[in-house]
Length: 628
Ligand code: ADP
Ligand code: MG
Image (cartoon, rainbow, N blue to C red):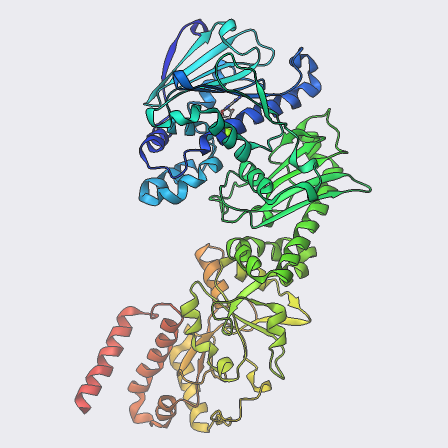
């Protein structure tokens, strides 16, 4: 019975916040509302096209999809209408009163935290496109009649907390589809100007796959302003860069420039077209666990789904579409998704994407560096997820290193700069580049001019642990096992270390080991230290220091391996400590513990036992004072 009367409902709280923001924050670009409404109209036409494959009667005598923009400058009104799938009463309440997509709350919080200027650029990505109508209108009416239904409904709101839904007389509704009526704000009346509308629609939405018609004022003859030819079926040579950019913006909901455009048609055993983009900036939800790929699947120009599994997860930043000529249309979406044809398309598209990235890397290092800065961390997931393409991905990978400065190094660069006798690709992993560069573990490498990769993404510890090789060279952590530096000569002018460890030193190392007990797994003379007295390294087998930390933080480590304390036998303080006799035993014990704590602190950890540490430090200070 409620079906028959007018209902007033309250917007979901998040919608109210969003609307408030839309109206009150200063928008650099209100024009985007038109793109959003046209994009919804086109989606509705595409949904109908899909439904009509199995239920052709839905089309009736009106088979051709169409979007109509109608201006009424005198009444300050603007209408965007489609003959698509339409909405039922419940669908309206659901679609125009709530926010479906996860991540929206986080978005709102960021915007409210004052990053508005940057983030309003992202509106289209959040599934909140419709609400952008309230940037230019102080009242919005939506009249919709679902395909195949003999009822129509009218939704209306001023965007201030509530909306109304009521049945609409059929003669005041579209025959099928949705009419969105904007009552324009005083400062937005220029959006009812025909030439403005034509310019905006053509430039922002000229390539949606549904034709667009403009009616300049009530009673005027409709005029076609975009023909709805799908951009991807046109010849590459005939498409201008701006056309690609517009299309990218409408499909990605991002308003920047694509970093790379990939357009090709595969022919042969399988026929399909691909139009895909690497975005110019990071989408907001790149690291959202639930984030799906964003490639749309079409079959012979009929839109099927936007969450088809068309690319592996590590390419989830790519936006675009695949249009297949061979997949069956008259089966369910689920069956299409499971088709072996789709698996082979996926393989083809993935290979092509990687080949294209490789081409950019080779021909335009600067452009590739930008892509890598935005998406390298995602691409690196492929190093452990996609064994077959690991080699290819390692070639693409770029790194910061002790030799990179602000630039990037490829593994080929690294190999080219390896020192005579060097057998491995050395790396150090941690969260912070500056701290890594200050690590004592690097000293011996630096002294020999050996480059060390600085791995600061958590994902690095995972792929590097799978022990890949590149060009026959293994990856080796400088915080693990023996440094094997003796194989690489020191430069002529460097002070030669005293390779013989004296018997004093050997005795001292044994003393430290006995003092520390099972705090450490071993105490060794170090060949990787030149300036510092001590450092910690992980045992040869198992995780390196950083990976152990990550596993520990994730609760995935049963028992942490005891580190090895390396002591620099050439260090003056160490040599002096080694010379002390048994009468100084208590002092030497304190020193042993303090050396271990020093190594922990250098590694970003805390002293092993804070209370004991302060007591030892106090004794040390007292001793200094007594002498002074
Ligand atoms: P999105 O398009 O990302 O889903 P929007 O805020 O733009 O988010 O639209 C919300 C929902 O409203 C759409 O998903 C759709 O269900 C519905 N909708 C909006 N406009 C139309 C339309 N013209 N025809 C049918 N449904 C529509
Ligand atoms: Mg939308």
